[in-house]
Amino acid sequence: MKLPIRNIILILFLFTFSYVRSQESISSLVNEQYLQKLVDTAKKYYPKNKTFDHKINFANEALKKAHLSWYDVITFSLAYSPTNTTNATAVTLTGFQAGIFVNLGSLLVKPNNIRQAKEDLAIAELNKKEYALNLEAEVKSRYYKYLQQTVLLKLQNQRAFDWEVYVKQVKYKFEKGEETLESYSKALVSLSEQKQYQTEAEGALLIAKSYLEEIIGKKLEEVH
Image (cartoon, rainbow, N blue to C red):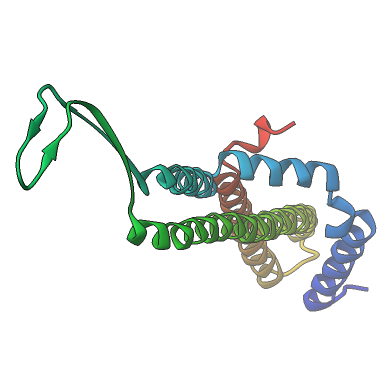
């Protein structure tokens, strides 16, 4: 008894789905140790992440300068007069005269400048921590997408293989006169569609791989 082609398609689909499902799932493919290496690699090589290190260094230097600026509050002066002059209104002493002057305006401003520099440093450090969390989440998201496309490609490869086997069977029966030209033509069209889906799945996997490599700053093959 010959089965209608739609029934054969359904059987092939159910067999392929059952096969892939029994083999693996995305969660079973997740390698936590490897994923952590990807996150660490991204934190080390992703260019935008490095900008936060520079901002922290800049804020540290600004804080150091703010602390050193305390010396600007006090001014020391030294004068030397070689002669001794006396008149009715003033007496000019000979020798060295030293003086220390305190800039009260600067004295009031300096503590605020130091506090501001500390706040800028704290903000820079918090921004880096926040971005590190966002970067980690993005790496994981792209890694899971890459695994998803890997599974989908395996599924599509299996579907295409099943259709190749089926088309060979239909062709054999058609040549023996046991199958109609319409059924054979439909099988060829379906195989062509599966091949197209296979190509699209391959492209999607390559794109997912490139997105993941873009954010970690290295090829996946270089991460061990």
